[in-house]
Length: 86
Image 1 (cartoon, rainbow, N blue to C red):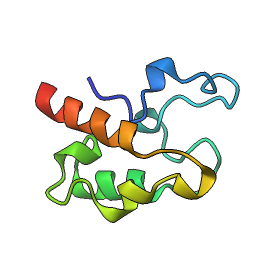
Image 2 (image 1 turned 180 degrees about the horizontal axis):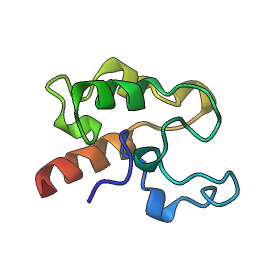
Image 3 (image 1 turned 180 degrees about the vertical axis):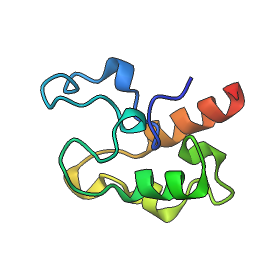
């Protein structure tokens, strides 16, 4: 079962409680108060997660968090798994 729009595994996130995050699928806006382009894109297209999109993996998902030092590949792989489970 999917837990986020972008492939983040919310069930194993160590920061979730620290930042009071309920997961993007259960929140109208990200915990940081800004806007998440990936979340908005999925919801506008009616997708549960990025893996359901025809343009997956798109440039936005592939670059998400890279500037902050995060590797997007685990999220992309997780979305692939979720798509297979659907």
